[in-house]
Every structure is written in C-alpha cells, then in structure tokens.
Image (tube, rainbow, N blue to C red):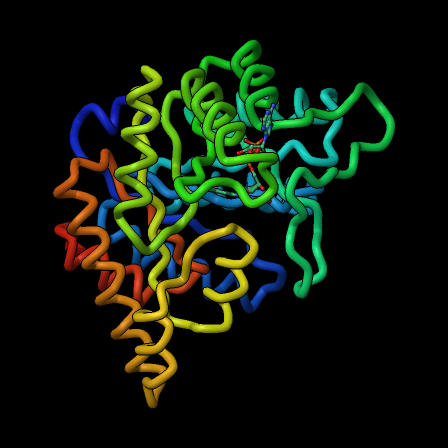
Length: 298
Ligand code: FAD
C-alpha cells in the first residue's frame, strides 16, 4: 500500500488511467493492456467511475485486480453526482475494507447528448432519496476526509472548467479545492503554457498542492474533438491538421505519440510532479510514450 503523496515525494511519477469495460471482450483487452503497461512499473494506475454509479462494482473490482494481479498501486475515482451521502459512506467503507490508500474525489458530469455542450453555470441533477447529494467535489473530498485516512486527489482544469460562472470564480473554486487535497490531476491539455499559468496562479494564492499533468496522446481526431469540446480544452490546429492529413491509423498513432512525448518532456523539465496518461484502455501508444519519457518496460 503506497500513498500517492509519498510516491510524489520520491520523485516524478508516471501513472495510467483506465475505465471499467462494458463487456467481456473489453475486459479481456483491458487485462492485456494492464499486463503490458504494468511492465513499465508506473507509480500508480487509476480506474474511472461512471457518474451515476453504474460502474460502482466494476471500478472496485478493477482496482483490486490491478493491486493483486499486477502488483501496481491502484486508485479508484469516485464521482458524487447522483449519489446520496449514505451511498458514498458505504462506498468508503467498502474501500476501507479493501485497504486502499488513495482516492480521486470528483463531481462527475450529468450524461449529455453527444452534440450538446455543458452550459455555463448549468444545473446538475440531484440524487434521488436519502440525504441530500453533494454539489461539488470539494464537499465530497471533505466528507471522505472525515471518514478515511487516505490521500485524496481532485481534478484540476488548467484551461478553466466549461461550466464555471466566470474565469475568476473558477480559479477561486479550484484554489480552495486544491488547497484541501493531497494532490490534483489535470484534465488533458496540449499547451504547456496552460499548465504553467495555472500552477503559478495557484502559487500566487499560496496553494502548493502537487498538480500531476494529464496527457492524452491525440491519435483520433473525432474523439479528441469531442472530449476537448466537453472539457473546454483547446485542440491546437497544428495537431488537428497533422492528424487529418495522415493516411493511416499507424501514422496517426505516431503523431499522437510524438505529440504526447514532446508535451511530457516539456512538463517534466518544467518540474511537473508527475504525468498521468489517459490510455482509453489501449496499451500501445501509452507504452511508447512511457518508454520515450524514461519509464521503459521491464
Ligand atoms: P468540481 O470541482 O465540483 O466543479 C467543477 C467546476 O464547477 C469548478 O471548477 C468550478 O468552475 C465550478 N464550481 C463547483 N463548485 C463551485 C463553487 N462552490 N463555487 C464556484 N464554482 C464552483 N468524470 C467521471 O464521470 N468519472 C471519472 O472517473 C472522472 N475522472 C476524471 C479524472 C480527472 C483527472 C479529471 C480531470 C476529470 C475526471 N472526470 C471524471 C470529469 C469530471 O467529473 C468533470 O470534469 C466534471 O465536470 C467536474 O468535476 P470536478 O471534480 O472538477 O468538479
């Protein structure tokens, strides 16, 4: 059992993120992906949580599998949208009995039609029944802190959150949230300036919580376009156009890996405490990025 704060104290970290698959075929692919990426000896891996609780069991099962079958520290994500306080308390108890040491406390998003974007200052659905739901990740983090002696991470949005009422309100909220967390992991971004600016704005507010940089190798135009729009992330036209001009999937993967490696190198040089690779449950690009950044496979 390793706390992420201790791993960060020991040096710059590498971590990988996965999602619980929906079917047996996806599960088999994820097992192969985990085996391949565990060989890079990442400091930890994390497993996402379906907002609304659909992956409650599977997230827990995959966190256990990563720790027990692949001997890598694993961190569950937990979203509070649509959960009651009693439900969250029960989830915390389950993880306490599993002996986990770290958790990523998130708000989560309401399910959206793929064509629509979150409105600025938009409303989220509330949990049904039980005691009132949480409105924001900071509340969830506080609730967990009162119950469990874990390292608690939160999400960071270097380009601002798309539902924020204003840039200032967002920064104020993020500073307060990060100040009470043990570490943060950013949304993916493609310009290091956003990361540098975000960290220096936090620093100016006296917040020194380690901010691990999230990296998503851009290998698929449609999916990066969709996620960038949802997250309010800039998808630079230079990367977009190179991918559009590529004539094969292999070439697109190469561009994605090259972009992620360049970004990762710059971030490590800037002193980012760690890099967190969004794998989309695929091994190859993440493995190539890890090797190029100094985490070769055994
Ligand atoms: P919050 O911090 O609660 O709020 C987001 C924004 O709302 C704030 O930045 C701020 O602008 C505004 N806000 C909230 N409260 C206040 C306040 N009191 N005052 C002023 N403004 C406020 N989603 C999933 O469903 N499952 C996952 O597993 C998952 N994993 C993620 C992992 C990472 C590393 C990241 C970066 C995101 C992840 N997400 C996941 C997406 C995340 O749920 C969304 O980005 C969501 O819209 C915001 O979550 P949050 O925890 O940052 O929310």
